[in-house]
Amino acid sequence: MSQGFRLGAFTIHWLQGGEFEVDGGSMFGVVPKVLWERKCISTPDNHVRLANSAMLVQTPQGNVLIDTGLGNKLTAKQKAIFRVRQEWDLLAGLARFGLSREAISHVILTHGDFDHAGGVTRQNETGGWELTFPAAMHYIQQQEWEDVLAPNKRSADAYWSENFAGLAEGKNLRLIAGEEEILPGVRLVCTGGHTRGHQAVWLESGGEAALHLGDLLPMPAYSNPLWIMAYDNFPLESIAAKEQFLEQAIRADAWLLFYHDPEILACKLDGDGAVREGLCAE
Ligand SMILES: [Zn+2]
Image (cartoon, rainbow, N blue to C red; front, side, top):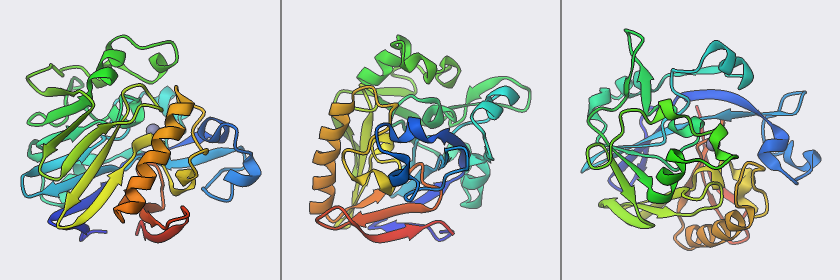
């Protein structure tokens, strides 16, 4: 993947946002283990291995990052709890493509959970916190931001204030009300489901399309609309959104991009939802 994945005039790279392990019951909810264990990499004690692949999308109009990985602020205790097996290495990943952190112009957050927003801020060389991408405008749904500021009892566990320190609306934060094209060919759409203000990202260039469904479709196994995470705050909304978005993706012959799959980076689905064509990690 060092050459990147071409989508019209766009190039997509999957970056090392850290890897961790999550309990299989939390990941698959009511789906029995005998079914899900065939579809992902699991440990003997029922944990699922998850990547956190922040995606760099290079467009003619700017360098866009979709989600930011675990970040470098986890304590030793948190790393043990979340079984971090691979450290966040986003900036080295960018450097390989000749990009500094100042070169990122747009940071899109599918939602505010720590495994997606952890890299918005970083611990610097002097031990303080700062915005990781100081020149970027950050994009999050209005509803998600309201919940980040005043989380409900379930989301409070996953929205960490240190991940949003330094963001100020109008300065480096733009709130999206539902749907908006933030750059030519980069469109954000609120999905709800996983969290109230969870959003998807449509990429369209040169007649080709790709869809990033965040935690509604963390891996290909979730292409069955009924396979959703137990973490989802609004499960029926997740199922309805996924049915709608997957139908659109199949109709547009779009690539589906995966944030959490350690092996499969993207795929296309055929009409009955089976994987037709896949793109694997090196
Ligand atoms: Zn996630």
